[in-house]
Length: 108
Image 1 (cartoon, rainbow, N blue to C red):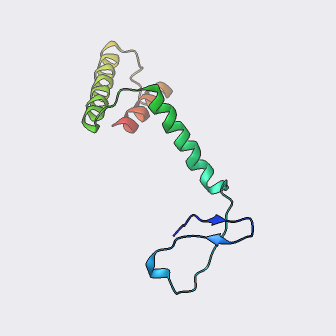
Image 2: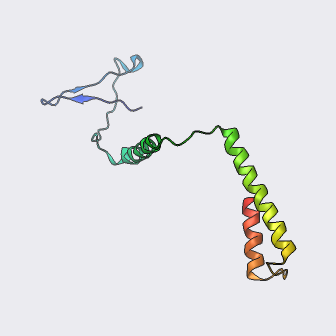
Image 3: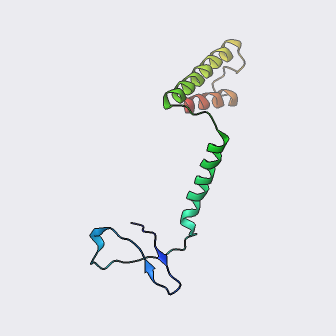
């Protein structure tokens, strides 16, 4: 559990703890307010603030899934067209064919 506390100039630590810890001995671990462990979260927070400021249109998860499925279908159609036109050599061991097959396996 992490609890934020204030330290006075005299070195007195002031913190509010949950009732279950009152009257018990606890161990306190100190970190600076600008600790390294919180810096990644600050970077993420700053990035999210920039995204909010950019006013990017929001999408529901259904809209995102619909866009992904449409993208997959367009790739399937493109692959069929490439095959029909013979743009990729049909020799199964050619580097172009292997690259295309590997790409489709990752997508689908």
